[in-house]
Image 1 (spheres, rainbow, N blue to C red):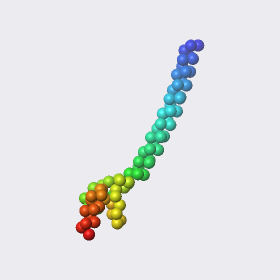
Image 2: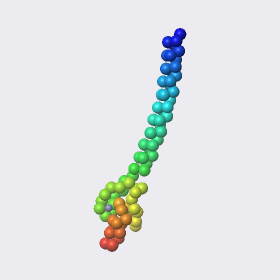
Image 3: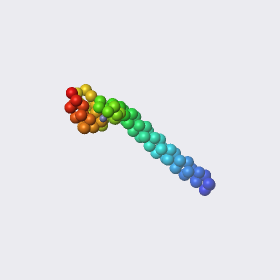
Image 4: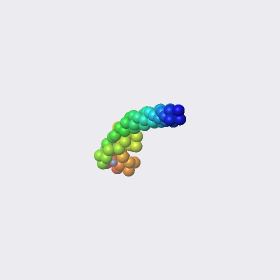
Length: 77
Ligand SMILES: [Zn+2]
């Protein structure tokens, strides 16, 4: 009877671990989807460097990788 009890405990423990793992996987997948949405890339109008849209500096319908490049490009105009 002891062996069956051990097997039952092991089974329950395995089921709990599997549940936790499934939840963690779902959480990771959700995170990945969010990153994909944020991951839009834009090109710096001055040097052509590709940067995430979130980090880009937008000015006069153009994107720039830094304030410096934004200023340089505006000085040329
Ligand atoms: Zn640039």
